[in-house]
Image (tube, rainbow, N blue to C red; front, side):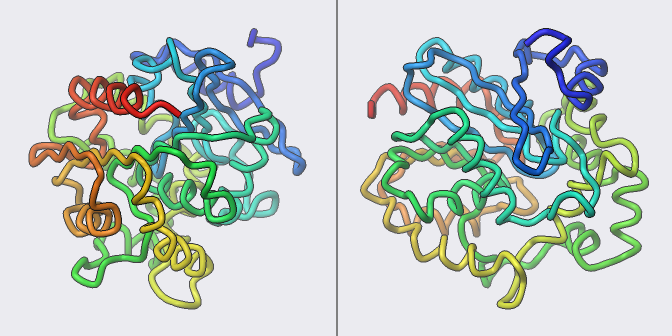
Length: 311
């Protein structure tokens, strides 16, 4: 893609770069609602497809080192969810920031790309519910799973909802502060890892969400967290939880940082119980952004896992 083909948001974000270890050319897909979604499509067109789904408050940047480690053989599809990364940042009048919208966006993008065969889902944070939610109607296409600090089921009964998330989800003052001062993305960039990120990497994670309009999706993701029946996303999360054990007959890789203030051992145990044969790399000295803390180990391990289980 040359400069003339960039969307306005892609051009704006790229002007803030360059971003470390992110030598990619973003692609653009215009949805039926007129919103442009940015995504990466790296690797051979005939390669086995790996769909990498980020969460909140990150973007495709989170997956950059895994893409670099796979793109010689695997076709890596890495979207920026609407409102995130280099995708458009619409107001509530133009886009409904819900889990179902994210699932619909992913489905439309894959259909646009002509990807209608088997895929590997690689998921992190909210990417887990987006990926598993998308798979509810086509689970037979998901042939392998790479699961990193995420969820596919309701909040475990032994796990308390973190105060930092409740402040964004349930408090108008908290929501105002998140959008006004970009608190969530800045906090994640500083406290989401056990090792200190370089200033350039921290800026890549948080700088994209500076400003009231730019931070809208970081808050809307939090406000959509389903905790009980009646919440909009609850039926999808409940259905995903029931479906999860069905993936136990497929290759699964679990990579986990136990120093995650949200997706901690309680969530890891949920995946272990549903997917008892999964290969695992679990770190007591890694945080939420486990690929930042442990890329040197995780990337070759995930590559070996995929190579060992060809489609």
